[in-house]
Length: 173
Image (cartoon, rainbow, N blue to C red; front, side, top):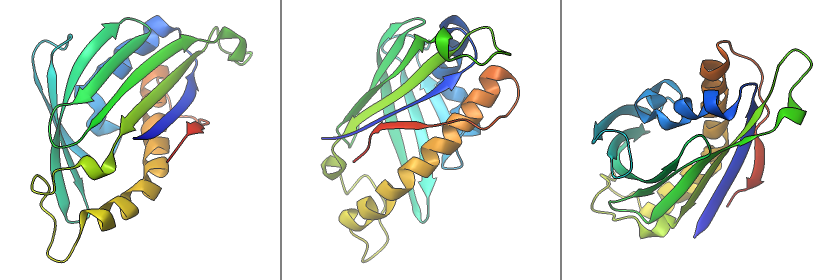
């Protein structure tokens, strides 16, 4: 299993941050590769989000199920189709990291554990002569840049204005 663990700061309390990380239907605003999100359920534990992804000549719909929610600290998820993956959004109070012009701060963690080779090749429409191994080699280096974009846009929504954010990479494949 590969693991990605990233974090950043938002200058708001966990109670103010958590609704943003929980709102999967807003995620297409944060990345160019997530085209749409459809939800089955009420957004609580057991809800399934169909995440329509597109990159290069590939398209894929991941079905992500919410497995646990502990507001305002944690939301865990797992993919329920075609790929062995699970993860967590975690929000921790970190007021000591707030700058002088902010009242408080929270550290937002994103963790994903996945086996890139567990993907069902029949579920992904690969172009002729393109292997899953080739796709994995091309996508993995792009993950960090994509994560930076997502974090910057998420923090801008949380704080109400864009700013430079620091993405801390704790672990990457």
